[in-house]
Structure formats: structure tokens, C-alpha cells
Image (cartoon, rainbow, N blue to C red; front, side):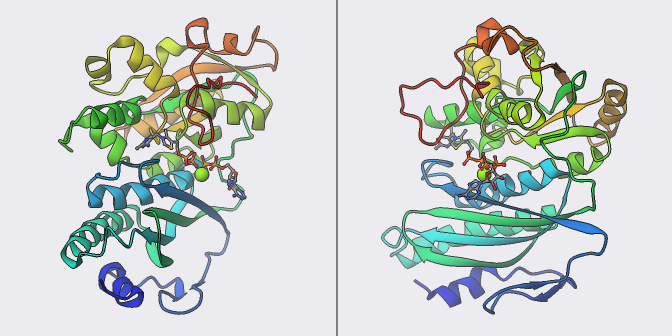
Length: 336
Ligand SMILES: Nc1ncnc2c1ncn2[C@@H]1O[C@H](COP(=O)(O)OP(=O)(O)O)[C@@H](O)[C@H]1O
Ligand SMILES: Cc1ncc(C[n+]2csc(CCOP(=O)(O)OP(=O)(O)O)c2C)c(N)n1
Ligand SMILES: [Mg+2]
């Protein structure tokens, strides 16, 4: 096994053009960056842990891609452009004791991670390597013209609630993986293991969406964040939620609906937008080959009869992902 520093140099020195806004990159105690004038920096960190966020036996390249993509998704949700990332990698010393196995895994992982960096225009500028349970913590930094970031707090009564793409594919892919499906070209497996952050969509929605977030925990749970931050309620039309390709065929109608409403791992954008701007936003995303579907309306707090009434009766016992929920607990997705 290579020493930490050799490992970093060997696997994680990204090729490509030097980034003129990196005054000092990998190799010193800290990174020095030159922010763009007239922009705010958007910064976020997300951790991916083996057997919590991805299966232990997932292909290494997918693990690398996914760890970056889910972190970059938070920049997309802010309407920011990706710029830089830091990757803190914890490797299981026992699993990586065999040199060939370690090399195979790290090569695949680096290919997935650095491929994502190239695709999202995010330069790897630092990180950390430690031993322990396999986990990856990715910090992303992006920029957005001052005042134009899409927050969770801007929704107002009357806004349309909309989602990009289709939902349920993340949870559907996880279910298929657990059933033994291993063909990474399967659309549902791709949605789970190779999600694509909606960066271009987020940028196109600047000045149009009144609020935005990415769907990581499940639509119902994540809607709760916008409701709380914006002090609105949401009348959701659960039947209007677009289902991922092949989801109903793979899971059946009930489980497909549950996956789309509360499965999580979709990394689509959830937005609110004034009705008069909806068609313009839809056209902008259509030009990117991405659907924008209206799934509900923002209403005054309390205007819907009860917690589950804000969704519809059939969704009442659905819940979103919670890291510390006991296995038997049901947590209403739209509870505050
Ligand atoms: N350990 C922590 N310390 C400080 N802030 C945290 C911590 N964990 C989460 N947060 C903050 O709480 C908010 C919600 O976090 P999270 O649910 O992980 O958001 P997301 O789904 O966008 O990743 C974010 O603003 C995040 O920065
Ligand atoms: C092996 C495995 N089991 C279960 C899941 C489901 N899952 C784990 S974490 C999570 C929610 C998203 O992760 P979180 O750490 O909450 O991300 P954040 O909201 O901070 O972006 C989901 C749906 C999964 N992705 N992989
Ligand atoms: Mg997070």
C-alpha cells in the first residue's frame, strides 16, 4: 500500500488545465483560492459512508462518481456554478492491505471521482486520507452572482411546486441492487449509483424559482424543509409526481409511488415558482432535455386540514430518510 502522500500524488493529481483561480493547490497546509468579484461563494459538505449511502460492493468508479455528485447537487440546488472540491477519504486498512486489490479499487474510484470533476468543472484542490470504515466526505465550493442564489426560504403562497426529471429511481435502483441486479446500464441502477447533479438547471432557474433544494431524503421530507423555511404549506398532487422510467414495472404501482414520494436518493431539484414564470422555466429546462413538472401549490400555513392532508390521504404514512430513526419508526415526511 502506498504511503498517504504517494497515494494522493499517484491517484488524485488531476490532469487538465491549471485553474488560474487556485493560487495554491494540493500539497500545502491549506488551499489558497481567488474568488470572483461580484460573486458569493456557495459551500457545502456531504459524507458518503459504505453500506449507508452506497453498497460496500458497489463498483469503485460509481462510489467515486456518486460521492462527488451528491455533494455537487447542493451547489445545483443553490443555482451556483461548481468551482472547487475537497475530498476526505477514509479507507479500510484491512480491505486495502492487498496491493493489487487496493490499486484496482483506487484506480476505479479516482476515475469516477476525477471524471465527475471534469464533467462538473470542479477542480480537486485538497482533501485528507485516513484509515477506518470506508467513507468519503466531499466539500464543494461554487460561486453565484451576488444576490442570485436560490434559497429554501423564498416560496410564497400561490407559487407552483415543481420537480425536475422523474422521481423514485434512486430508491428503485437500491431495491434492484438488493435483489441482485448488477447491470450498471439499467436505468434505475444508474439513477441510484450514478446520479447527475442538475447544475445547468439550477443556473437556468436563477431569477425564476422563488426557492429550491435538491431531493436527497425524499420528496415529502424535503418539501418539509421548504415549508418550514418559507412558512408556507403545500397542497401536493401526489398523482402528478413523475415516476422514473421503468419504476412501476420493476416495483409495482404502490412501491413505485412510495419510492417517488419518500425513497430519496433522486438528486432532482424541488422548486417553487410564480405561476407566470413556470412556462419560461419549463422551456429553459426543456432546452437541456430535462422535464419540469408541476406537482403542487404553495398555500397559507394551516390552509390544508392536517399534516397528511397537505399531501393526500394515501401518502399519510410515508416517510423520508432519517439516519437515526429506529428501523420500526415511521416519521411523517411532512411533519414540522
Ligand atoms: N454537523 C453539522 N454542523 C453544522 N451544520 C450542520 C451539520 N450538519 C448539517 N448542518 C447544516 O444543516 C443544514 C441541513 O443539512 P443537510 O440536511 O445535510 O442538508 P443537505 O440535504 O442539503 O445536505 C445545512 O445547512 C448543513 O450545513
Ligand atoms: C446501501 C444504502 N442503503 C440505504 C440508502 C438510502 N439512503 C441512505 S442516506 C439517504 C438520504 C440522503 O443522505 P444524507 O446523508 O441525508 O444526505 P443529505 O440530505 O445530507 O444530502 C438515503 C435515501 C442508500 N443510499 N444506500
Ligand atoms: Mg447534507
